[in-house]
Length: 400
Image 1 (spheres, rainbow, N blue to C red):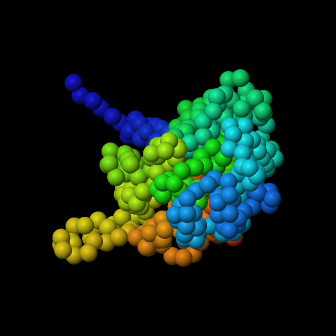
Image 2 (spheres, helix red, strand yellow; image 1 turned 30 degrees about the horizontal axis):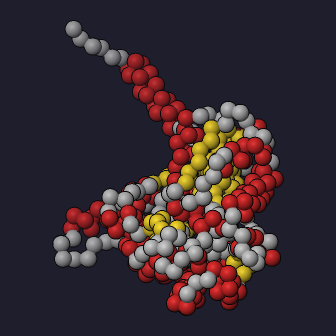
Image 3 (cartoon, rainbow, N blue to C red; image 1 turned 120 degrees about the vertical axis):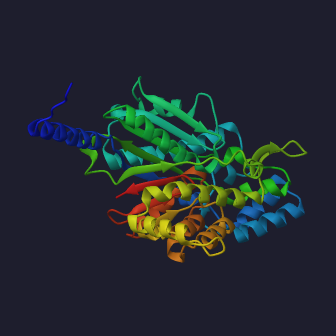
């Protein structure tokens, strides 16, 4: 039996395959970040370093060694004298009740959601997905339920509560949204990320747990994402890649941040020196994954040639990520963390400016911190069209 294919048939088959290829490529659902909003507390919630120490002395009854340690931590933290605490923590006596924590969270998240809805003009009935993100704060009914009730969102809305995942949880939520929007066509997703400083004050004298009192401040962010093709020209960014790596199998990484009680029964979050080790390990792992996705062909070729020709004792070639990545926004965990990242990854002072200024003006707001960095870069006019942004230990590539 012979198979005979004439030129017209061959042409038709080739044309069909080409059309199928382009159809599949163009039919891929793209995910856009329409806009985002960052919460800025009122000026009457600002607190300077000396006032913070004085309130801790009078009200929380820390011992002398703990107060001296906190004073040194504040001096080295990189925070300025105009960061923000919650209303409950500024009262005398301070109010750390569940109601005060709920008030802090609701003021922040309702403020950013209202601002985002105003900026984008989106209707509540058009929001089909809701993801709330908190590092340690958790209530019942859930925060997502509180938002649904407040804004009368759809009864069939897909909602998720991400909690207990620390400062990277906001970008974990982006990966979740990206996957959801690949499945559910013509949809909008609202992501809200914040934290409660009121609910997480440590009242003991264990030094490893006192750091959280010094660096965490009030903040919140709301983001609107969509896969609607009609939003292409009105969206700020397009989400291209989310890459996430786990290092929890490593004991040093697993134990570097841990919520537990001290010997006196006070609950707090232990942060030890292995945090820097865990951060660098995760970032290096992510770099190895993200490099093939974002590096230009010229850099890939140079790396390959070097890999083949370099002897074991010679220094290996490090790809130039600045050719494809113009902005790098690490989590603002504190000045020592930023110093170590800049030194080991070779970033310039200009590339680290947004992170350092966010830490100075806002402080560490947990998973919402990186969006304050993005907002800073936008305000300075540094985010240009077609430039790549990489954020935190999860690598997110946005194409403007």
